[in-house]
Length: 466
Image (cartoon, rainbow, N blue to C red):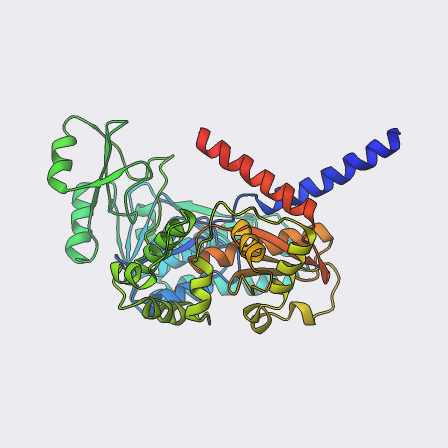
């Protein structure tokens, strides 16, 4: 009897752990484009080797400046030449390490603050690293720095640090310096200190870049006001106000710095974001959707025009009919069929989806430990299949894949992470991340779906309480 109970407990724990993996916090994509202000933001480490691709895309969309505040990562060697080529002014926050330092200090104009901290170092040791790799990394860093206008003082300082380094590849050194020192280390570009820490610095930025505007915000509950220039809008829990109102309130409210720790900002990516978010809200509320009317409200000629722009911007082939299917709601009073039969229908639709099969070789690749997930509204899709088992919904969804993982769990986690990344990059609203196939087998069991929804509802209830 004890053995039987142990087995049941183990099965429940296994299924529940899979559900937890599916609803865990999304990876935050570090590169954003603020369309109204034509700004590219990099505010997080570039941990994905494909992140830099979106920098090029945003340049085509008319980006005029770059705002940086991150600790390094991949893509600096791709982004730096583009910043130089397009003569983009760069604005830096509190810290700028590694790739961030290379990008910013290579810019023709760099705006920063007196106490901003920069950090430069050789690339870290990677698996299979050799002495030749280390030599190449040192030569590459030297070349990039000299191209950016590095002075003899900087290059001598680096060589001294390398000589003192006792590590095998002499790549565990790092030098840190502030804006004042940066002006001594680089003489090719124009470096303006105190750009954000003093009012005259902010005014200087706006005089030279008329597309950059201050945004004025207040938090009525906390009696706080803040003006932002580095960030794309007001912090969370703050509302935007007119300049004249701000001047009145700053005399009686607490004026805080826009880069104060703890503040969080939402990124306004333009009219496509606004349209997508409203469609999601109306759909979730169970209201009828007038796609053309909502599209016109956000500056498009029609919904077809909006889909056309979306396809062009994101290189994502989707028909108007499939886009409508994505947002169309269903009667919330429908009793959803969560049977294995309905889940098998969902699996079939996901597996045979034309977008997945045109863009991925997942089902044609025979490898060990692979998985694929889909970003969908699980309850809505199952409701549609309950009403009509012949439905092909979801006709459009964002997917994530993982091949050749070290374990089954690694494949699942990798597929979910990839799915989250692409959902954010394609500017789609939050969704349910469902791992529907693992090693060419249907992963949509009744237990998996039930535990996933149970976990999701738990997190949603916690959000409401907090």
